[in-house]
Image (cartoon, rainbow, N blue to C red; front, side, top):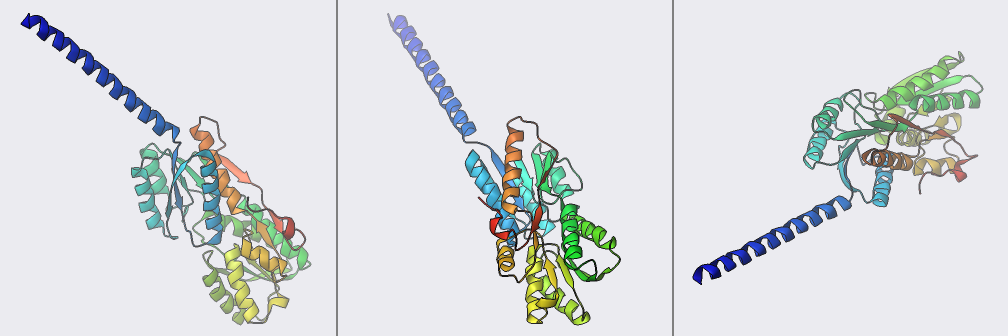
Length: 320
């Protein structure tokens, strides 16, 4: 009788154990399923968040991520390649599904891209390219085209002759190199257009103001200015207006940030080139999302850019 009771008790214990293990497995599966349904995790390594252009880029990425239920881990390298390397190393430890990078420097970023490759994490770049490593897709604007648009605008506005100043961005980036290349190609085709000064201001407003102050002192005659981004244009504008020379200098920038659109409306600056950063941010996030969902994506996505003047500034759409 005792043995029968013991056997019955053991059978009940076994049944309960199987039941509990089954429940535990079911709960674990439910948790994993819930985690998967939460969406992808994507790292976003920004080169800077002090420049309004890149603030708008980040906002575009965030908007698209929110629409798709994606969790973003965002870092700010403060325009320092060594900080960006550490940022990306930290992002890798979070094991995201992908990492989007806006490089501080096209050469310096290669080691970080390769680290992502070794970790098996998909890499996407935007605006500025990486000169090495495996990148699934790059999304940006045609920087050579932007430079050509700027050069042609000054040629047309000045009637094919004049003394020109070029303020360049961070020359370690393909964007700065290409914008300068396109600009110089157009100017070189017009023998009566002379570039009297070419200076680097690292895409920075304060640096551009200082650089322009020195250029103004050294050049009594300046007919046109091309600043390779709007932040530098606005810095140069401060120096030009302080020197009382705004009437004599035709100015064009690049990016179409809000502050520049305002000074165009006020007719203090003649033009910029629209490369809306918000839509750049949305485009890169959507490209990464498509890839993670098994869709084929283009290796190089070029967005449209265009000239902005007083004639079309009121109708330009740069954000949602």
